[in-house]
Image (cartoon, rainbow, N blue to C red; front, top):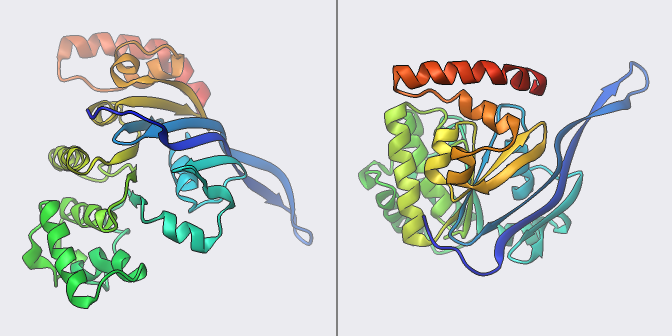
Length: 290
């Protein structure tokens, strides 16, 4: 893992995102709120990976989208490079997004099927008016080569490739503007296990080469352990435990973290039987979190 120093690159303080529950026929009124993210705080330093882990519905992806300002927070602060993103207008956010990019979960839905691979990867350069058509194409070829994708396929379309290949295209697009932080929203959950390992190794290699910081969102503790310097465990919109990755994995303190760890499969029948017994002890905790 990279060595991290200096001031945090990303500082999230007291972040909240509430979705209104509306009711009524003639008069539509708000009767309650779903507290998807409820008073969440964390930091990410340059070159560091913070793993945000939890079950589906725990609020981890919503937190990531609030950091990116794809969802506007209900309240709280998101400081990136010392700039408050929650109060920025579109023009300001457009400049910030040169340094703040995302790799989406679904490699099928996140790529425009009507655009060629070259157009997809070079689109950020076009949006930010960087270079001319020839230089953008050359940059796209170089980016595809960096992520281990054959640049000769630059004129093909997304439907011609596997999930792992599509995710490489998405990663190349995220690298186009040379960002300092990438939000990885479950980037391997839709892929086969062998392909997951390839993409995780690619992300680690890119981090070492370009000094990237990652906010790595996932529900799989084993994947998060592989990628992260620190882990923050989310449950019901709150962070219930945070610490160094090995410490959280080997000695979780919160009952919910213990329950998540007990659900991770182990390729050892004897240890798996012990783990099943341990999991039964935590079933009440998991049931209460639903």
